[in-house]
Amino acid sequence: MAVPAFGDPSIGSKRAQAEQVMAKVQQLGQSLESAIAQYQYASIQLKQIQHDQALNRRELKIARANLRTSQHTIAQRLVSLYRGDQVSTLEVILGAKSLDDMLNRLDTEKSVSRQDTSVLREIQASRTDMQVSAKRLAKANATQTRIVAERAAKKHQIESTIAEQNRLLSSIKNQIAQLQAAQRAQQLRLQHQAELRLQAERAAALQRQNNTVVGASASTPNSPNDIAPPSQYSSGAVSAAMTQLGVPYIWGGATPGVGFDCSGLVMWAYAQVGVSLPHSTYAMWNYGVPVSAGDLEPGDLLFFDGLGHMGMYIGGGQFIEAPHTGAFVQISNLADRMGGFVGARRIL
Image (cartoon, rainbow, N blue to C red; front, side, top):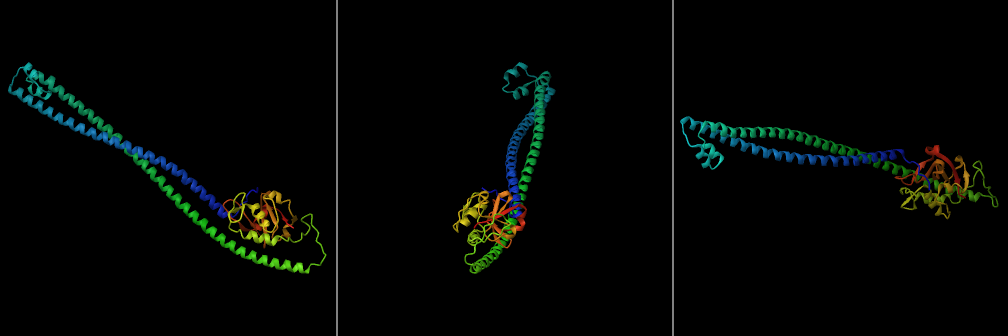
């Protein structure tokens, strides 16, 4: 099968640019999923820290209330000692119903320093632990809040970049659409010109036939330096190919209205006038007779890129081809492709 050649470079470059943008959008989409997952996980961690801190604040509040109660108890006990209220220590301990009750019943200064002060220190130590815990959780909360903010910013940045790339992609697609519309309009103009030339060629061919001397024969050339006789199939083959303008390129395609590759288009067009050609640019190079670039006529087969691509000459310096993937059957200027031109053959 033939290797496709390049068509309109502007549309091709825009398509390549669009593919790059779409690939970038896809990559960004994957990054966004990761960023969203990290953001959600950081938010969950933040909620847990906030929950723990709320519990800590409640515990600290209870500890402070207990501290105030104990401080009040100690103050009352000092007043009692000052007034000389004496009760048996054993009776106080045995009769106590709770820690607070025992503190209220203690009646000696020694008991106050050993019992009440011990309780006070325990509560103070508890309060200090709570304060340290609160500071630690506050620091963790601040750190987690910062992480959540950073990941939210990253998520927003990726979303903004995707939106920007989508706008660029939309712009490129609009440009491609405009280029394609301009190309279609140009193809219609070229088609009309080609049809007029074909009509003129048919009239000229008919005139030559009427003027041909009966019994005269034309020699078959063996090299491009000889002038090849006109082909009896050229007009019909070109007309058939022209009906497929706008049909998409499909590698290996040879189905009208569906898709063609370069050799498939030429094979099908000549099949419409009863000529069987192989579906291969390399094989077609061995068919017909050689024709020089200066003696081209409509219907001649043109070969490019080391026989990797081909088209059909339609006159006026133009040819019809199925250029490459993403393109359509179109009319092109031969002058733009002479850099890769290999040669031409005429089917007699």
